[in-house]
Figure 1 (cartoon, rainbow, N blue to C red):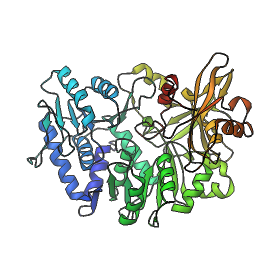
Figure 2 (figure 1 turned 120 degrees about the vertical axis):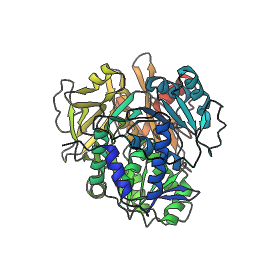
Figure 3 (figure 1 turned 180 degrees about the horizontal axis):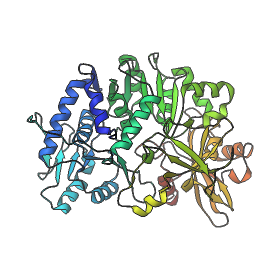
Figure 4 (figure 1 turned 135 degrees about the horizontal axis):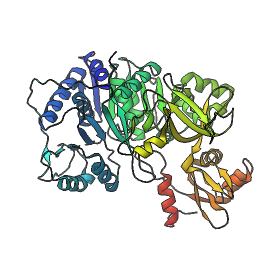
Amino acid sequence: MQQTTFQAVLLKGLRRFAELPAVTLLPSEETITYRELLEKIELVSTYLHNLGARRGTHIATLISNSLEAVIFGLAVQRLGATLVPLGEKLGPREVGFILREAKPKLVIMATKPHVTTILEYLEEANDPNVHVIGLPGFGVDYPEKFMIFEWPVEKKDLDFPVSEGEDIALLSYTGGTTGTPKGVMHSQAGLAAGILSAAIEDPIDDRDRLLLSTPIVHAGGSLLWRALISGVHVYVMRAFDAEYFIKAIKKYQITTTFMVPTMLYRLLDQVKIMEYDVSSMRSIFYGASPISPKQLKEAFEVFGPIMRQQYGMTECNIVISRLSKSAHVWAYHNNQEVLKSCGKPCLFTEVRVIDDNGQDVGQNEMGEIIVKSPSMLVGYYQRPEQTQEAIRDGWFYTGDIGKWDEYGYLYIVDRKKDMIISGGMNVYSSEVERVVNQHPAVAMSACIGVPHPDWGEAVCVVVSGRAGSSCTEEDIIQFCKERTSKYMVPKVVYFQEQFPLTPIGKIDKKELKKMYAQGLLTI
C-alpha cells in the first residue's frame, strides 16, 4: 500500500470546500475562498516550476504572517519540493548560516532586515539557477539582483510532481538558542501522520473560525495546515496585539486559537481594563510551558473550561502528548498538581521516561523523555552523528527531563541543558520557576545558572512583576525558603520589565545569561 503523503492530504482537503472562506488577513480583512486559495497555489507552483523548482528542490521562505505566507508555503508542497521556512525574527547570523547549509535554489522573501544577508547568499552562490524572489507590498526596497513577483501569473497546464512518502517535505531549523541551528528533516509520510493524528485528537471543522497571531512558520503553521484540511475559516494577524485580539474574537466570532502562555497572560491582563465578549470561544490550544493554577483559574473565569495544552517539539511535529479540556477541568477541581503536567501521550505516539542506563523509571522518578512516532523527524540535515545520537533503536531522545505520576500524566521537569548543578546538587530550573511564580507580585520568572567560584553554578532568578505590585529580592528569597529545598533557593534575584523571547515566544535563557555576563540585569 502506498504511503499517504502530506502533499496528497493537503490537496484533497483544500479541494473539498470550494466557496467557503479559507483565509482572512487581519486587520485588512482581505479574504480568499478555498477555491481562490487553490487557484493561487497552482499559479505560484507553476511560477516556481518555471524557475527550475522540482520535487525535492530546497525552497526557503522568509515571509511575515500574510496571505502570501500561506500561499507560497502551500505552493512549495504542491510542487513536492522541500520547504525551508525561516522566521522573520531570526538574526542575520542565523539566516546566513541556514541558507549556506540548506543551499535553497529559490528564496522567497518579504522582510526588510534580511535583504543584505540574502543578497550576500545570492552573490556567494554565484549560480544562475539560484534565484531570490521579492514579494511586493511589504515595504521592502529590493536589490536589482532580486526578481520581483507580480500577479497575475500566466496559467499553464502542468503535470505537477507526485510526492513519495520518503521525500523530505519540510526542513525546519531549530531555534539555535544553543550553538548553531540544526535542520530537522520531516518526510511527506511523517507530516501526513502528524496532521492526521491532530485531526483525530483536535476536532475542528468547517463551522470553526481559527485566529492565529503567532508566526505561522512555527507551531501556528501546523495548526494552519490542520485547519485547512477541514474547511476551517482561518484568520491570520500580522502580529499579536492583546487589545485587538480580544476585539477580534467578538467581531469575527472566533471559536479557536493557539498561543504561548506569555500571550495568554497578556490577554488576562487586558480584559481587566476593557469590555469583552469571548462567548464564541470553544478551544484555546497552548504550548511551550504549563500554566499555573492561579492563572488557569483566571483563564477559566474569562474564557471558560476550554484550555488544551500540547507538548511537542520541532523534531516531533508537535505531537508528543496533550492535556485535554476534560483533563484540565478534572485537575482543576480534583488535583491541581496535574495542571503542571503535559498530559498523556498522543494517539500515534509512544513515550518512555528512562534513566541513564536506558531503563524505564518508576512513578515520580526523574529520567529523560524518549519518543517513538510515525510523525517524528527522519534526521538532522547533514548531521549523521547528531542524528545517530538523537535517534536510537527508533526512539528519539528529546533532551527533556520528565516523570510520570500515578495517574499516567507526563511532567516535564526541565531541559537537560537548563539543569543547574550547584554544589553538586541537581537544580531543575522549571521547579524553581514554579515556586517563584506563586508569589502574588510575580507575573513571570526565569531561572538560570550563573558561574560561582565555590558552588560551580549559583541559582539565579530573573523576575517580571505584576502591574501594580512590587517586591524585593529579599521578599522572593524568603518566599522560596519557606516553600522549597535549601539548595533550590535563589542566591540572587534580578528584575526585568520584559524578557528577551525566542522567535516562538519562549523566554530566551541564553540571552538572559548573556545579559548577566554583560552586567545588564538589575536588582
